[in-house]
Amino acid sequence: MKAKIKSENKVYDADLFAVIDKVWGTQTVAFDEDMKTLRLIDYFEKKNNSLMKKVVWVETKCKGWVKRGKISGYKWFLDACSDFEHLENLPAEILEKCKEVQSACKIREWNLLKSQRSLDKLLGVSISFHDSFVEKLEKKGDKAFLTLNTTWGYRVNLILEGEVELNVELNYGRKGEIFHANMFIEDDKIYWVNGWIKSKAEFLPTEKYFCAKKMNWNIEVV
Image 1 (cartoon, rainbow, N blue to C red):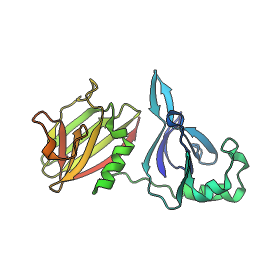
Image 2 (cartoon, helix red, strand yellow):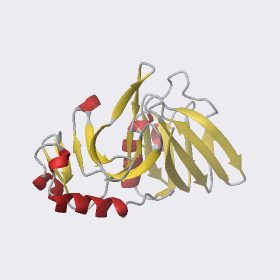
Image 3 (cartoon, rainbow, N blue to C red):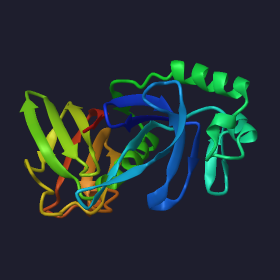
Image 4 (cartoon, helix red, strand yellow):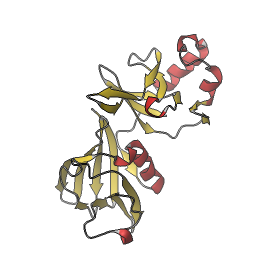
């Protein structure tokens, strides 16, 4: 599982070796920014009385990832690690394997939305855009650039191309209008819509949405 991790000094790309699900107290095992020391890192941090994500996963499709109750991770790592509080006791060969995996960690700059599965992945990454707002909106010809600030400490940047429709405006969502967004494909176009709507047939005249024939996205941790 690949993610962007925010430390005190920078944002870096990392491979996650295990995730301990504790809801708001969820933790992950990954290298610190020095890329030499494995740490137990909190998913969230409290900042100005708000929860911000320190770990933003971007790619979840990885070979050998298993789930064991509240803990998930690479099978070879979970088989070797029984004490997440004392990662310094990991066998040397496991630590070396972790370093090899991390050295190959490369997150694509842009991700193409091409199937419902890829849309669902983005909805998962963005927490269904809960409490997001439109921070940037720019249209040039048949292309548009849109940024949704998740308010969780990261932004989702989108590039829309082909038959672009923008029925949202700059700063939409700042008053809490976006509680839950959905995305779907219909008539060869990709739709983002505020609410649980799953088809254009459910649209009301006042619906807030945007769509295009092609969409790419990336994550910007702030």
